[in-house]
Length: 368
Ligand SMILES: [Zn+2]
Image (tube, rainbow, N blue to C red; front, side, top):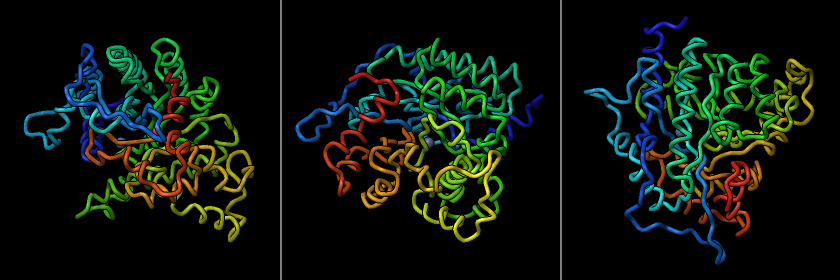
């Protein structure tokens, strides 16, 4: 059984690292945007843009963990509250040229016991579905799943997709300190592969930064700017090296923050095995089938690398066909995700159209 103390401890760390955003949009009627909507054109063609990295939260579900979206004296940014309104969110999307957001919720329920997790996820996924139904041309959502109970998570994913019309699952980069490549999570991966849906991996604020908390203290938000990408780097590396991607070759995985550091220094993964072959003998299922960097091309990555040179390099390492827009909305990391793609050198119009929305629309079942 989980304890309230554990919940609150987790909550405090989660809020410090990631924080949550309310979706009063979840109860909202169809919202009408006030501002002028930016319509993105490439080569004379209107492009339906899709943002795969957009946060929200369901307060009613959080309450089951003894959590509140905000409390008096909260240090959470006011934007969290502003962004809870569907009309506010859509206005920001319109200004930024984002046509569709794929909503996700960072897991805060990984310590919940089976009963609480069942109730929480059911409620949360229902509310996500309601949010999408209220503005069906602007929102789709990833199902939330209780990955700490892998068989339950598999069922929740299936229910999310088949009952609620959700478009995949969002998960953390680790689960209570366990790697998502651990065989215990195979029932979830098997279901995701069977359903053919996208799994969005977002680092946990309580992930790798917890182990490194003394190193990541101090000025500069290092627990986030280093800790978050590092958690994604570790998670993806285990999926490669432990053979998860071999065992489930049909998996569609999208990593937040451009895949963390992995694509920036991918060649070291290959050269580690060349330098010390005994350390690369294989994971649970023996040797992996390809060189480590070859697996980069079978995953997807959001574009949150901020500079044209960063995005050019990411495209060079993983392939432009593997990139999709991410904004981290409503966290104010960027308001120029569209221009970032348009301004990246070396991308053809077809590649820009794919990154801006074509690839994500296909992955998420969004019709033109
Ligand atoms: Zn995020």
